[in-house]
Length: 310
Image (cartoon, rainbow, N blue to C red; front, side, top):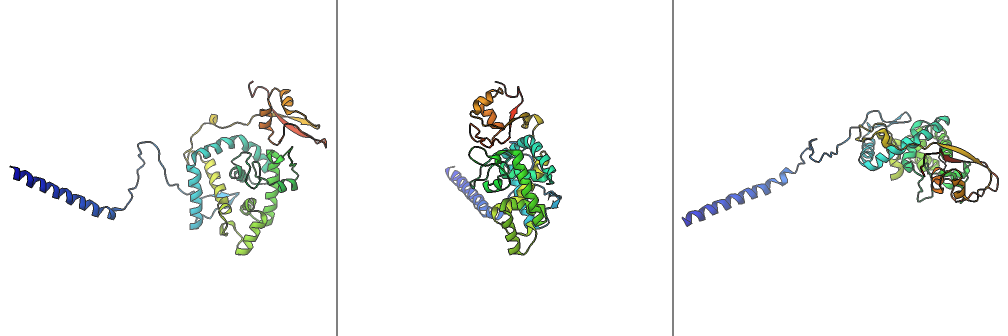
């Protein structure tokens, strides 16, 4: 009986060893990833994205039939689709700020698609770059001053959305006249007019999509087009929200000031708000007072009564 048990154990060990050896031999040969199904238990899925066939910027087509262009466009669509928190913030802020930007673009003859340029420049915030560019349109100090903005420690109109948008329009119109296309005009906003002109000459081409550029400018137009596509098709790219979830523009009235203001805290209190609220609506006021030795006329925005509850 004991001998039978020993034989049985030996047979079992042989069978187990054979199975293990077979599995080890088969593993490397089956180095294939199973195609995932759409049924995921935790409810979260990540999908490859279908490339839209009609991508364009300001009516100028993105040549996605070119394999290099296809891959670069696909990258930006993926990155911006699956960076969900940032994407949702762009939807929220766009609802608040696009109504201010759009009419200024239209008034200056700039295609509406350029509002997406401000999205990738600053995320629709008064950002400050390492190079010193500031505001929604990331305007450098020299550029701002050349185009009539007041920029000093007391007042910095690069933070004035309406005035900064007009400066951006002027730059873009000049760039379009120089390069002949809105795509190259937009690219020059990142690389500079001279930078784009030099690259076009060096490489003997006349189109953005034919240029070999550095990382930032090379991705620039693809990022703009990706944000345009996503912001215009939220459901398609998995963003779910209601109108109540979006940020709203706070209505204001303009108070004209042509004198110095010694204390903006006391100035704000006269209108039933505090200094913080005053600065939120007038970020171009950089100090808690206004010098105004030249008696320049400024318009200070004051939120309508009752918006901010005490």
